[in-house]
Image 1 (cartoon, helix red, strand yellow):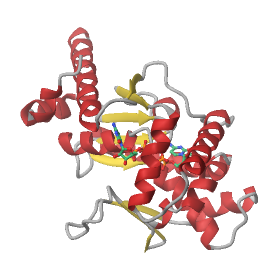
Image 2: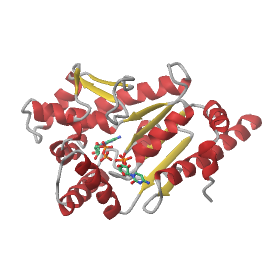
Image 3: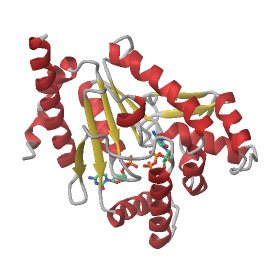
Image 4: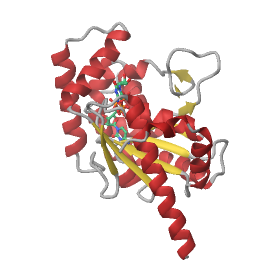
Length: 265
Ligand code: CDP
Ligand code: CDP
């Protein structure tokens, strides 16, 4: 049962955020399933860092397109992934344009450029390259470990992606797999693009998304799949608030289980 009241209990959330060890929440799922929406809200409620790992693969793809590197040149794209510096920063107080994080590539703010349809179309090919994954996974793991230990400016981390629960942080004490029907996900993405003034036919958005999900799920290295111990949330007919409430219930169960385990040890 969804206990939406939890969403409005800051003290309970504060306590749960402090009790999760290591303080790492892994959220995976297909495109436009609502991973970032629930992840961002959960991170804010718990005072954790929100880290959407998809932006790193988007940043490499954007850099390749901007520099004229052919998307099918695996060697050149792999070298580019190692060569560029990607910085992920919390938004500045004066940035009210809906960003969850600021993304810099070699110092340039690419936060919105990495959301271009051309990046959407090419990102799955780029992120299937082993060199790209090696470079990105190492960076993500180092960040997750630092925040998970409590050695950083936030007391934990919510990490969102495709392979966080399976490959990047398989020991995360709470894993969520967020899903929704493809037609609903395409409807959401279509609406999002329209709000940004990008009027792409719905059928095209759906086809591109299904194609991207297929590449992400079928690649040999770190494919998109639910970790055996991840809790699946299907939010096809849920509001974002319902999804958050379900995530908080799952967090409470994970914290209770870890406290029982600590008592036994
Ligand atoms: O927002 P949306 O779900 O559409 O995509 P995203 O999370 O920004 O991820 C963009 C792409 O990056 C995905 O389609 C995957 O190809 C790749 N990705 C990945 O391979 N591994 C991750 N941990 C995160 C993203
Ligand atoms: O991160 P991911 O690509 O999985 O999805 P998202 O960016 O969190 O969500 C995609 C869109 O769906 C956003 O515009 C959300 O506001 C919307 N959404 C929704 O309509 N209902 C939900 N339960 C969750 C998200």
